[in-house]
Image (cartoon, rainbow over the protein chains, first blue to last red):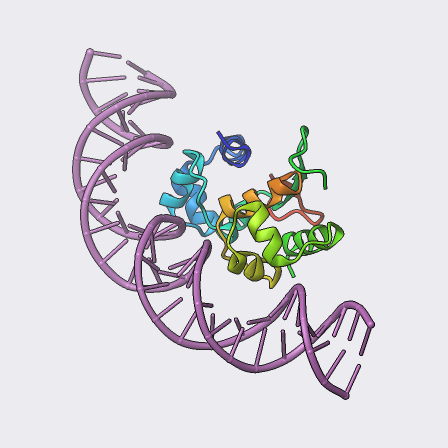
Length: 71
Length: 71
DNA sequence: CGAATTTATACCTTATCGGGTATAATGTCA
DNA sequence: TGACATTATACCCGATAAGGTATAAATTCG
């Protein structure tokens, strides 16, 4: 399960919102939230960002522990 | 310009790679990298993640300064 | 400056995402 | 337990992302 999926699911529940209500409030489709929380990886960046914004966050690069390449 | 776009552009240059070379090495299309660095917002999450992984990073939620909602 | 390299932009095709709707599965609470 | 609310899954359609190719613009370097 993706980090983002968990984040959204937890944040949503913390606010006591249903997926439907969150969809209305954040402006994305219900199906999108379902897909995201279900772990779909091929979502559109702007939509995810729109959702995260509702929770006071945005998408950004986070360093990996193990580091992929040496950059 | 999105945070991510700048991140990729800088990281790529820091490694002295051309867009073409980065495309080959990271496994995404050249056009994708072009679009991303050009600020396109409607990219797919998994592709961006794939690229960030090459730089030892991943996509994740980052707190906003001003905070959108009260979450 | 001129030549070569790199990046930006445009056009085209294929695959699929987002959204709607319907239905099934699951969870919640009396 | 049953009734209700919520979430998960499946199908359809329109819009568009991704990638390829070609060309123009910009950058680099002698």
